[in-house]
Image 1 (tube, rainbow, N blue to C red):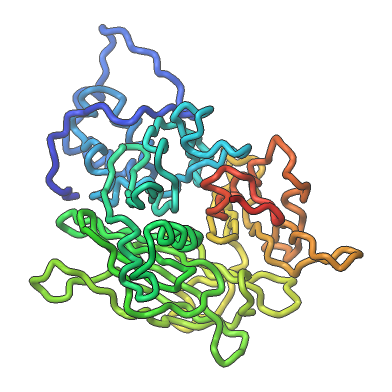
Image 2: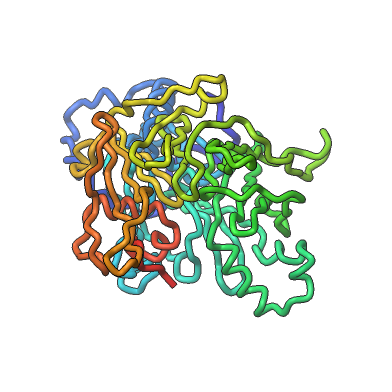
Length: 444
């Protein structure tokens, strides 16, 4: 495998990471022969890439076995953003609950992350959160926002690599209605923009990092490359979406109802910006395009796209009784095969403003495989006619039945279940403020 040119392979000091899944290895006596010390460098490099394909932190532990292995493999620091192989996919920032947001004084500058595949937890020292907030997590990378100057940064939480992106304020002058607003008014307007942000990241062959932001509250796309002075806003608007936009492999995907009013869901794709000419460094967006349609109930908040097993699934209800969820592969729909999946194996899907795929294993003892956790069914009204929060339930694909996933106490009872923490990750406005999700509690 080829890699982009970077400094030499000798290890350096990176972010301090404490793992709940590691044990300190005993040092072998000097007189004991260790054949792994003499493994060929090219063989170690090959093994390293195979390990990295599974998980970044496994690769970090692999390099830590001995100095020879460390020197024979590429260090992640400095490559964490520009080489997608080092992106910490399947890692998610853990919502602590109790309002202990990243940067809270009680956390001492540490932030916890957990693997959606293994259930492993790590604690990382990230002092950057003293004056930044998290907007989004994409491929395990964190999109950060700094309040006082609206600067946007892309952070690799495990290597500390940072890409500097333009201030988000640069979007507003591109819209006529904001051109003559005061700076204070513009800052207030930006808070509305930040309620629905989805990011997609692409890296060019030369190492240029380009980010697309779907500003769902304004139905526009903004894009910028690290080092640019401003965000470029799309000249077109997205359709009214049924659920917040999702990203997959550098592209954005959106769901909208069929304008004819039928129970048909349209799937839109927004490709990364491309050079305007062959020799140009400026980029432009192509219009969003419909790639497929699917017969599902097109009700707001009840259809979802989720990445699972390195492909995209579409989940929704097949009739207005809201009794049965169906799962389709996007790749199947594109070729005209409208056949639902009835078994997703050990995987469990969590659906909210964004959707997550978790692997049930010993790291997640309370997560049941082949289930979907959501609160998408019809609302419940009490005797006074007041709508109660929709219950958070498991849908069991094998039996097509529902069961309660999380009790509906207000406020949520502590200690919280792991299921509740994972479900909170599906709601950005709760997740980044460390407030456990509840249907009647909205974070400030």
